[in-house]
Amino acid sequence: MTIEVDTRTVNINTLISLAGFLATFVFIGVAWGATQATLSDLEQWRENHEAAHRDLMTTIRTSEAVFEQQITAVRSNVAKLDQLEYRMATLEKALENTDTRISRVTESYSNQFADFRTQLSSISTQIALTNQTLQRIEAAAPNLPR
Image 1 (cartoon, rainbow, N blue to C red):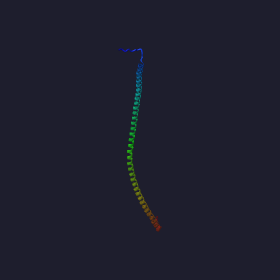
Image 2 (cartoon, rainbow, N blue to C red):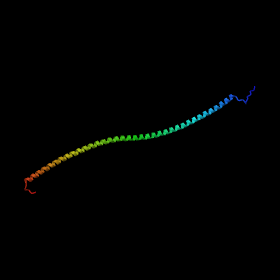
Image 3 (cartoon, helix red, strand yellow):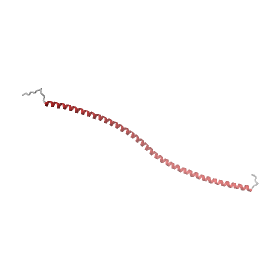
Image 4 (cartoon, rainbow, N blue to C red):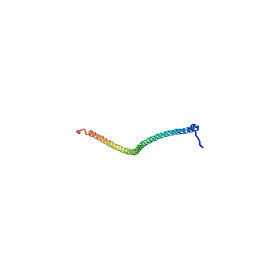
């Protein structure tokens, strides 16, 4: 039994099968190209995203460094404030002591001026008495040479 195939006649099923086979390759090629384009886009996005992260990390590190410097400056100023509080307390105590000393000196000079006034008053009285005595002596002895 032998089967003879006529090569001159084209079967419609063969054409459909060939067309389907070719279409499958075309669709596989289109799908491959679309997949490659998508992968390329994803790769580009990943690179851009990594670059954005690097830039963001650089910005964050820079901000952290500036922030650390500012915190260091604030700590330094706070330490100075603590010293200023101590210095202010010391100055206030010194001012109180100075005020007390000035009050004592003022009181001392006030007492000395009162003593001077008393002495001047006494001397003034003695001078007045001496003048009166001289006037009486001169009145009692008009003939005495001068």
